[in-house]
Amino acid sequence: MERLTIKEIARLAGVSKATVSRVLNGRPGVSPQTREKVERIIQTYSYRPSPLARGLSSQKTGVIALVVSHSAARLSAHPFLLEFLPGISHVLEEYGFRLVLSIPDSEERYELACQQIAQERLAEGVVVLGVRRNDPRLPFLFKNNIPLVTVGKPIGYTNVSFVDADNYGGARLATEHLIELGYKRILFVNGPKEHTAAIAREEGYKAVMLAHNLKPDVVYGDFSYVSGYQAVKEWWRKGRRVLAVFAASDMAAIGASTAFKEMGIKVGGEAAVVGFDDIPYASFFDPPLTTVRQPIRELGEAAGRLILRVLGEGGTESVILPTALVVRASTSRRA
Image 1 (tube, one colour):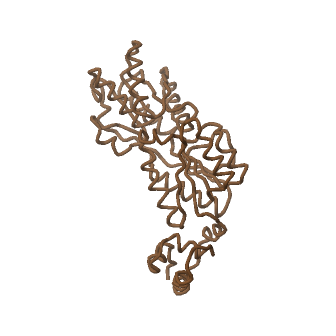
Image 2 (cartoon, one colour):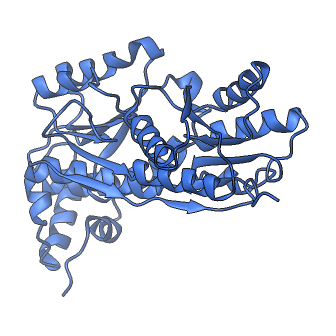
Image 3 (cartoon, rainbow, N blue to C red):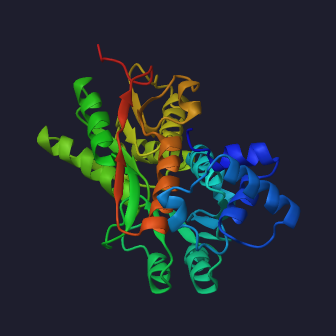
């Protein structure tokens, strides 16, 4: 007989997956009657925890913390998180873990979350989203031996498990696409300069531009709509009449497209704009946005699986998911 999952045991017993996990790991908080019911089902179906589950049996809180660097006020401008959360939550719930989202009060206080989690041991493991070069949050976790996974390559640190998309390769695809359309001056609207995904995307963009003997032009923002909008407006105000934009996020690309439209320049005609992410709104925008698709939900699932492996087995591992260019109407071949 195929081994039951925690989810199936919970369904048969009429309890939550968290309750089954507490029974399996011998933790309190379960009534004797419920514990007996769950144990009877386990015995009947000869349930045996997987090696991963056995490795996790010493957990205390059943909590995984997801730490982000953006304040709550700015999260609405970054749809990435809305797709990432269902992926990681689904995986953790299968093993009876709860995901707790840690959001700083302000951008300046983003280190405090990791410090509190580490010192007070509020979580069994931590996933850090939006990792930066030499990220100052990570040493708090190292010092207190908190299992850690970063979303993004943790530049400046070794022996840290991480999941990431192929940001470098995706940026190359976007830049090559614009050059193939005949554009020679391509503005790259990047995210924060120290953000590791932004670093990789900039490296990919510059590699292609230099290979074609073209001059790279980079401006830094924060992945937001406003940063893309302001970049295009500012360049044109200074007389730099750039008509091709590659933005490091879809929201910045949409902002850039809006700026062009306000100036009476047709996007997908005279101008071309490429984003990065492929958020759901990208295909509904006018014109639909050409973008580099990164598998955001799958990144969440990969992060969930990896933090569980780190908790259960230790070691260091990296997972890189592929990116792909999705061509839509915001880019077209120039006449």
